[in-house]
Length: 504
Image 1 (cartoon, one colour):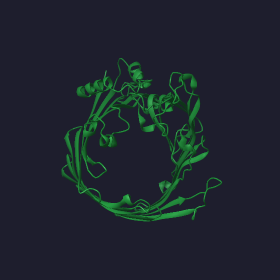
Image 2: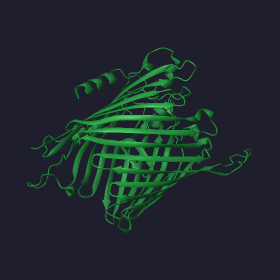
Image 3: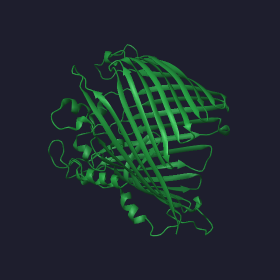
């Protein structure tokens, strides 16, 4: 932990000047302000996870130059739970009905020690240089209150949320109030997490404006939602969210044309909905979600499914997916004609024995061509299909588990077929496991000759519990492909998970 702290200080001091420290997660201040001077039965949990990866990248071209990539990523998570003591003297933990407070944080440090980092006008080095070159990210950091007054939940700080098919991250506050009639009212507001900031997180940032002034703007976000709660047979939620860029707080940002200040505009405005049902004692489970983009007037994402459990041994699942790329409303990509991706799947699973499961699945892809514009040429076919399927068999025992899988997909878009065999063997009780996997794939693109070939890979690894709460995982892979005579990759993960419980 001390070494990790030193890395943080070094990374911040040496961070490039392109990003500026913006409004850091409010939870960092909340952690200090909200932590009680004295608390009973408070639990502190720290998780440090270090990931290392090494492999070689061949540069396209006649020289066939090899570049090494040696990545190191460390996650440091800290949580302080049960800040509020039990109400009754004989209670070991505070009851859920009485409400609770907790602090949850996560930070990521990363660096690449590969050969590409050397300075100079190296074309091959720029080829594999990561677009996002930051060294430190604050993933989330917030103070959370649960069931306060048997009615209110809240979060304060950097947080990420999922609403059906809508996902976003912001620095601010979120609250939910449960009212009678099994309804819950939600509201939230704050600043969209900026990927260009020193402690930013680019994962949830909208695409389409990278490298422009709009990408560096302060973008407030607010929204509201209504959901059902306390019902065992159904779960549903409808939400609205708006992200915008007001000119008043972006006066000091230089626009792309050299002028000072950015005009006001809306970055994203969506309505999302989701539901999940549980009927007939869990034998019938429908679910669905959608996201409507009000800025473009399009239905961006739709998913719907149904799960039928005929018996405890027989299960049938059906799924439909439709999705479109999503861009910032300031992006020029919104003016292009976008074709949605559509996919339908059907899976049947049977368990003839308690430790054995068999599965068969079918898949259908839909490619729709539309005529856009007065001078556009009508397509030969308005709808083209791709179809395929697969089968698998799995065994899960006390000391050994394995899974054999095969699949194939053809039609419009090309052909893909492959299979895999995965195994895990426990050789020393629950302290040491050996993993092995072999897989292969053949692919053929109808349009691009460079996307035709095969790859076969063999993976061997181990997962060891060095001490209680400390785990080491190592995985090596050797791959043979149409373009590489061999490609070796090594991956390692060291995890330390500690919890202490403090009493007054």
